[in-house]
Length: 230
Image (cartoon, rainbow, N blue to C red; front, side, top):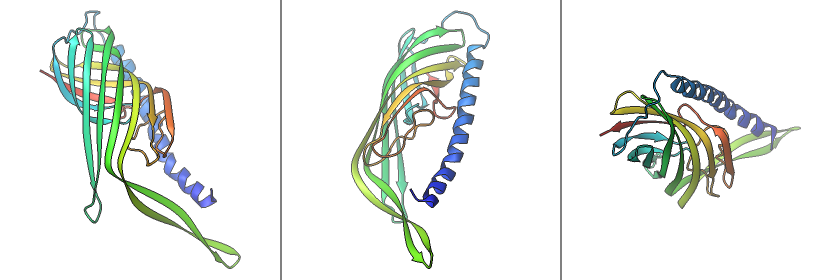
């Protein structure tokens, strides 16, 4: 890789690394604070409750959620989200996120549940913009002048899959509202066309044809949720 390209890549990665370190630190502190919050051993019984909210998953899937507590300690969750990007020509780039999973409560207090879960996610893009950057160098006397050139193409019907096993703390401000933070294990598989999911933390990959596995991954905004319960 040319020196100019390496310096450019390092400069782009530095802010992401700094934000990742901050997010992991805040996640650990938040999880510890919730677990140490005073309470009793009585379980937070949500059986039969139906919740609507938002989830940002470890794998990078994001969207609105529907949660149903089928039992006192077991909940099912469905996730769906979409984004639409328009260029100067008003061409649309659409990405749809889906997720399906469940979680089981292993520890609880009057105000919080600690659960382990399993979630499968999928992202679909009917039309995906693929950006490619190349370095074009031309001789200039004894030296060379290099210019970065960017080209854009469109590919259709792109799918990306991921799976995660989160450890999540859900804190209930009341019977009707809660927030949730998580960390855990995740794996993502980037298709040859490029990434649709944008995970943070250990194992996060965004390059085409890459696979990422993270153990102990998590981020304050990369694995968070809120729910309103009926």
